[in-house]
Image (cartoon, rainbow, N blue to C red; front, top):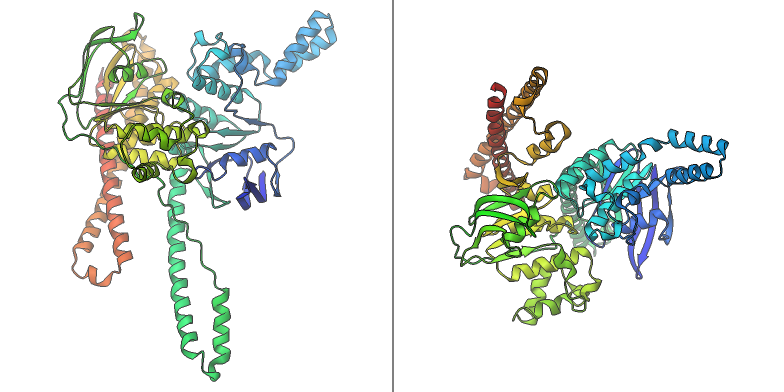
Length: 626
């Protein structure tokens, strides 16, 4: 097991960890969460020995092999395939031994090296590297391309691929889903679930955490607390803990008030002297329970003009591409106010190409892209982080593009999480997440009526992702988004467009259906007219099993809807009862109202899921009958 015991550590003479202790057992998959700056990456650096704690110790089995994801690697002339294969240093060494023994005609050394090479999977070495590369979105043409010719985001993918190639018992991953698309994230889910060692990761993708983590480690105020399960389970447990601590604090306050009242009343009476002294000592010993308050650090929104055109954007017989290379061919689509469109498609299908066309950064090869007169487009892309003026501060950058007063600029930046010295720190010294927030803040200043977002959650922490999802949900204009963050897509998107084989079409399924389609079983686009009889029977059997699974899920949802609807009805009657206000205090009433609101939202979510499943069920019935 891995253990941190009573770790104390200061950064810039400021305490970061104060008696931090935690244990991660072998075979577990732990995710470290917490606000920016609480020390998540510092924990990794301490574990790797790159930093030394001021006090305390860290231990894990000395025979454990550790693999860690490096975010920054010097560009190399080695091919992508060779760069990834370099991750297995022992097999690389054996290859050099085989080459040396062959050159020197050393038969005994050659036999020993070949035997060791075979025992360690050397003959599957290249295939393993290619499988990882393809899973992370690289094509066969990419394998021979030099590492240094890839963009920064794709080099991060190569770093991840190399890390996954390293034989390890202990895998440290710092933001592994950054720069991945939805399809690559789906593949990474499956790879990590097959990994037999211990995983410790830092991630800001709540759905990724839910599916990977067996436990969540929350860093706050210099200490760590471990919660079982994924992020959703962590939220529930933490909420219960906060409620319990708040209740305990209230009890302690009442007890302190009662004891203080006794002391004040009888302090002057000699007959009560011993009792008064006893109670004074009791007051001194009583400690306040530290109530953890998660106040949202971000309080922003996207304002939009009140005038909208119908439609906002029109694609008429459009073909998009580059230098006569057609990526998306001959499509006609419309974008209307209030649309929330998520773009799906495998790497290279043309998702970013479509967004560039909407943002007028790419002209069509054929056809017309018409953005209406009153439609202003706000476009977010990763390259915008790289073109920020590094010598300016966030304050100066906003000041050059607006006529707001100094205090208004400070207030505006504060809503986006910039406060204190970070407001005036040079942009070149900001983190990736801070730069992304600044670009989004500048986008909000434009008051766009259509937001076009290409992977907006890269580098953002969980609180910022939640705030962004909420802001998009409340935005009055239209949103078109490409994202690998499934939580954001599930919360904000009500329509998907799928780009496949050069065509765009509305996708009627949800993200679960799309992921199932990506799996090896259903990713094969089966043409039943060309299958032999046995294959047709197998295909129909698969469809029948899928239909049975859908039916079971629909039954579960209907049961949940009945149960929750009953509770909502009961709560509604209780809240409408005139005597309720007389007998409930404010906290109890607020708790009931919050519960009523949560249940109502859950009903809406379940009903949406029910409609999607019944549609898939109907489609499956048609397929089975063919």
